[in-house]
Image (spheres, rainbow, N blue to C red):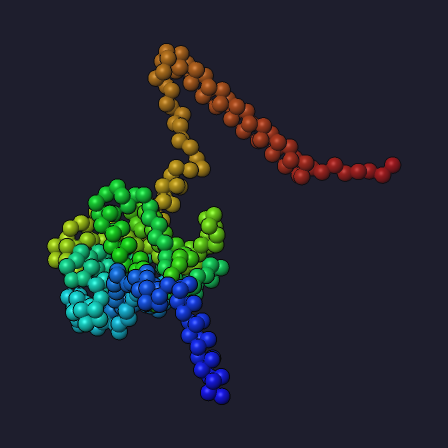
Length: 337
């Protein structure tokens, strides 16, 4: 029995030596695999909201969290706290980027993108929000996979668009070899500029030829201001075409306030413009046109003829009435033959 065991051990040693000669050593394989999977870009984004956002805005925040495997969650920020506390919250969570959803009047939602702690930070007004559950689109992607970022060529034209592009790349781009990410690309984020707003779309990559299907969510970012620091300090750029939603609501109310008076005025103007009778012409307007003597003789003749006709009509009526009375007073008596 002992000899058999020794033979087996000798055979195993020979096989292991043959494998070592054929294959490279294990240490080198581990080193090369470790170098490929080294996580260098350690971007961490703190995604949270303040109190006062609506249910739709909350669902949008959850959709963005699903799309970003490198995010860190946080509870809602109280209204009594200022935006300066966000820097401390990011330091505690070891995050260098922040996305804050700020609600106003349970109607309007603002989104803050900030580079912590030195800035810059950008304030957006979020419009036309459509969540993934609301759209029910056919597209789908693996959770945790890395996205491709597609930007409109207008981002390279002006300085503030270039700064916005860089901050969007650093926040929405998933770092390579992140522990919670998948090592491939299967969807695309598109950022297009239209009407001085940034339109966000998320598409699934169906094939290498360029076939795409939309996944969701959808939203529009209207830039308001760019600040030099994180959540404050001096304003580097301000949107001249931006109008706050409260001011827009005030304008619509003022326009609807005078709606009744405007309607009555429109009716009166329409009645004057589309009157049934045209301008009444006076019969004596054309008296002084032409030769006045001829006009006077014509008028006198016309009046005389009219008076004569009236007298004849009266005399005829009197004769007819007399004949009727005579017939009634002296009726004819018929005699039998």
